Amino acid sequence: MTKLFVIVFILCVYCFTLIRCTKHKKINEIDEATLRSEQIIVKNADEAIIELKNGNKRFLENKLINYNYKRQIELSKGRQKPYAIILSCMDSRVPPEIVFDQGIGHLFALRVAGNVEDENILGSIEYAVEHGHSKVIVVMGHSHCGAVKGSIIGTELENLTQLLDQIKPSIKAYPGTLDIVEAVSKNNVKTTIQDILKRSNFISDHVNDNKIEIVGAYYNIETGEVSFLD
Image 1 (cartoon, rainbow, N blue to C red):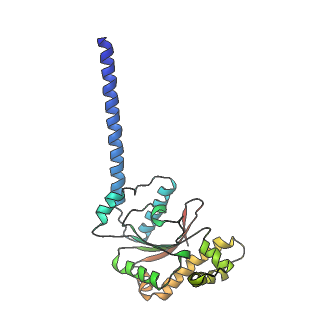
Image 2 (cartoon, rainbow, N blue to C red):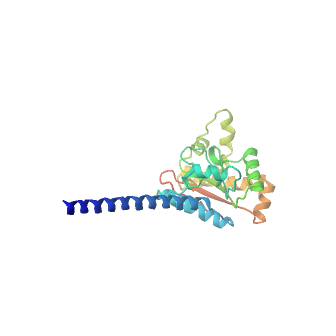
Image 3 (cartoon, rainbow, N blue to C red):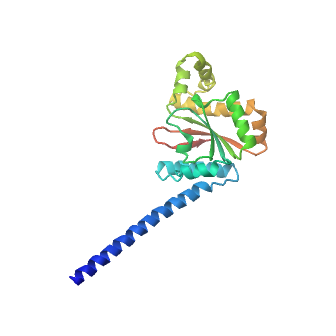
């Protein structure tokens, strides 16, 4: 009986120790993830793009680290230092903060159907460049874009008509050998970048002075992968 008691006692101690170790391991993993998400420091556009690529890789592998939103709210309530500006489509399947695994205060995210620019978008980017700490502007299109499809087939609807008209110049550049929606979506990213630089001297000057970089990207809604365009 005494021997059985000793064996049971030893097993209980072992199980208790194992549970505590596992619990501490999980806590340490959470603390490490929180620390990593809080210490995103980029010095230039190249480092910013690398972080975005790494974030998308984490997203694809389901290894997200930016999930402690309560902690991020506390850290960002008095200041913000977004390292990137993302202009993307309003499509509900393309949320920039999620597909790049970025937390609160990490990105300036601008969203509009067809990821096109107007005075409001330009003013928002100018504000972000002037008052933020961003190193890169990313214009991101995506596959199966409804706005692009609407522009191709000539959809008309009150204020939507003028928005879709902004995409039409990208249709003219369609080579006729690829999937038309994908080709026009990528052309539209390049056209938007050109228009931003053409319509905002402030942004153009900052790009020319190497204070910020502007690049294109493309999100595949079927795979979740983001590719950066040349």
